[in-house]
Image: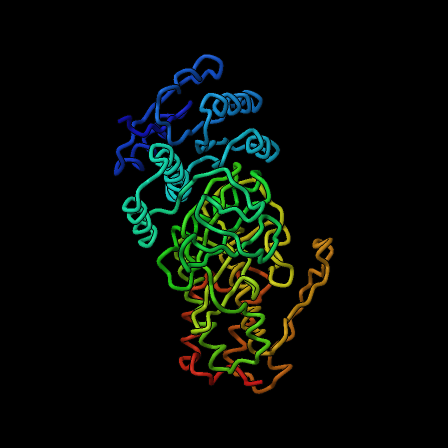
Length: 437
C-alpha cells in the first residue's frame, strides 16, 4: 500500500524542517522538488498518494499562478494546496485563490499559527485519500471515524460532489432540512444525520473563493474544541470545490431573542460570565473572534451559552493584507472600522453586551451599513449611571473601561477583564449587580 505523500515545491530548508517537525507523528512520505518547473515536473506526481501540496510562491506572480494551474491539472483530483507567500501587496492573493489554492500563509512563518492551518489541510487531504481507497467503508470503520470525531481528533470527511438541489444529502450523510440563514460568506442549513435523529448545522460557502474563511474557522474551532461554550466542529466536507463546515446544532435561542423574554439579573450575570470564559479562553490561545454580538451567541434551553461564527476570527500572529473592516457595525470599536484589530477589540464588544445587559439598550446605534466609514467616529457613550443612577459604581467603571476609544486604555484581553470584574464585584453572578428591569 502506498504511503501518503506530502509534496513540497520550492520550499526553503527552514520551511522543510518545520514541515518535518509537524509531520513527525504521522507516517507520511515527504517529497521535495526544487526548483519546481510546472512544465516538466508535473509528471512526477503520477502514481503517488499525494495528500497535500505546499508551494512557495516566487517573485513572479504569473509564474506562481501558472504553477498552481499545472499542479491542479496534474493531480486530477481534490488535493489541498497551501501557498506560502512573501510580503507582497494584497492584489495577487485573490488571483492565487482563483487559480486553485485552498489557503495561503504570508511569510515570515509563525510556527504556532501555521501549524493550526497546516493540520486542517493535512487531515482533509488524508481523509480524501482514505475515502478514495475505501469507496464503501464498512460500519465498523465508520464507527471508528465517529469515535475520532467525538474526541475532537478528526473533523474531515470529503466525499461526494452532490449539491443541495432536491435536498440530496451532503457527503451522502447529512440531509438538508431547511435553510436557517444567509450570510455574507455562506448559507447556513439545518441538516440531519441520515438514519439517525442527530441534527447539525452545515455552513456552506457561496463560492470556492470563500474557502479561506471556512478553513480558518475550522482551524480556530479545532484549537478551541474542548471549551464547553464553543460550538463544536463535527467535520469538514469538500464538495464542488467548497469546504463545508458541519457543526453542532444548538437547541435554544439567540441572545437577542432571550433578551426579549426579559431574563432576570441573575440569568444575565451568569450568561456574561460564560461569555467571558469562552472569550478569555480564545484570547489565551491568541485568537480574536472579531464579531461578538447577540446574533452570534446562542443560549441552550438548559442555560448553556454557545459562541458561534468564527468566520471572521483570526490569530494574532496571522499575517495577511486584508484591511477591510470585519465585524458588525454596532459592536465594532473605532480601530475596527480601519481594518485594525487586536484582542482588545473583542473587549469592546464585550463591553457593549454588558452595557446592554445593564441598561437594556445599546450604547451606540449606528445605522449606516451601506457606507460604514461614514459613521460618527466620535462614538460618545453615555455612562450607565447617567441613565440609571443605582448602577453600581464598579460595574460602570468596568463597562467604561471596555468602551475606551483607545484600545490601549481598555482591558488587554478577556482574562484581564474577567479578573478585574470579579475583583471589583466578587458577587457578580448571583444577580446582585445588574439592575432588574
